[in-house]
Amino acid sequence: MDAITSENLGASLICFGLIELTEAWGERVPPETDEQRKAKMLLELRRSEREKAKAAEVKGEKKLTKQLTVEEMQKKQREEEEERRKDEELMKQMKPSAPIKVLLDLTSIHDLINSLDRMSTFDRHLAELNPESEIDFNEENSALANANRPYKKQFELLPELQEPAHYSEDAEINAICEQINDLESIPDPPESVKNAFAITLFCMEAAVDSRSKDFLKYAFELYPERDYLIVTQPHTVPENALLSKFTLVKKKLSNTFSHVLYIIHRDFLLEQNISMTRTEKSDYEGINELLCSMPSESDESSDQILANIREATERHDSKWLAYSARVEDSIVATFIISKDVNLDYYKSHFHVQD
Image (cartoon, rainbow, N blue to C red; front, top):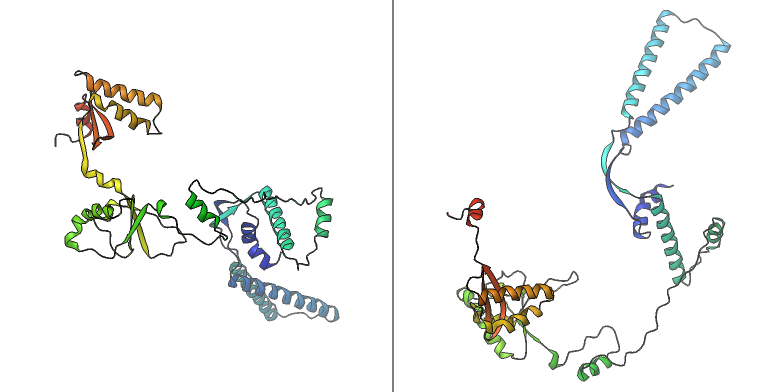
C-alpha cells in the first residue's frame, strides 16, 4: 500500500464507508525519526563497504600472501575495534523508540468488510449519476460472482406524489396554500391566525428597570387578540429585570440573526391576581377538572388525591390540611400539607433550631 493511500484510508472508511469504530487506548511504537533513518542508512553503507573491502582483500591474498608486522597487526586491530564502536553507536541511534500510549480507533473484520461494501456501492451510485462516467464494473462484477457474492442492484422506489386537494379546515389558509408553487416562498399568514406581536428592545433606563414589567399590561391591551409577546434585543445588551420574566428561546445552529429572542404569554399577568385559601367543598369540581387536565396523573392517583383533599376539608381530626390557589374564579393549583412532623428527625439532620 502506497503512503498516500495508507494515510487517507481511515478517513475514507469513516466518511464513505460509515465504519463503526470504538475508541480505546493502546501502545504503539512511534514512527522512525530522521536521526534513526540516517543512522540506519549509515550502518548499511558501512557494512556494504566492509563486505566489498573484505572481498577485495580475499581476492588479493590469493595472488600474494604477505606476512604482517606486529605494528601492522596492532593497527588493524585498532581499526577493527573503532569500526565496531562506531557500529554500536549507530545501532543505539537506530534503536526503535519506546512504545507510547495513543488513542486508537478499533474495529472488527466484519465491520471493515461491511464498510468496504458500502464504499463500493457508493462508488457505483456516483458513476450511475454521472452520465459521462467511463468506469467499467464488469471486472468487479466477475470477481464478486466468483466469490459467490454477486452484486445486486437495489432500488427504493419513492411513492408517487399526490397533489393534496385540502390543506386546512380554514378556507383562508387553504386558499393561501393553493397559491404556493415553489419550496422557498413563505406567505404572510392571515390576520385571523396571528397570535403574537413583537417588540425590539434596544435600551432601558436603569431608574425604571425594577418597574419595567408594569408596561406589559399596557402592551397586551394594545393587542387584545394576541396571546404572546416577543421581545428581541442585541446579544451584547445585559438582561434586565423585565426579561427575567420571559422565556429565552434557544437559537438554531444556522441562525445568523444578531439578536436574542424572548417570549411571554399574556396569562403571566395573572400572577398578581393569585390568591391562596383553605380548600372548601365548593372547590371539589374545580380541583377535579384540574386533575383531569394533567396527563401524567392516572385515574387511581387522581382519586387518591381527591380522597385526601376531602378528608382534610371535611374532618377536623385529619392529618392533612388542604389549600387551593385561584385566579379570579378558577382554581389553578391545589396541595395538601401534613400535620405530622417528625421534628426530632429533622433536628438530627439539619440545624433547625439555629
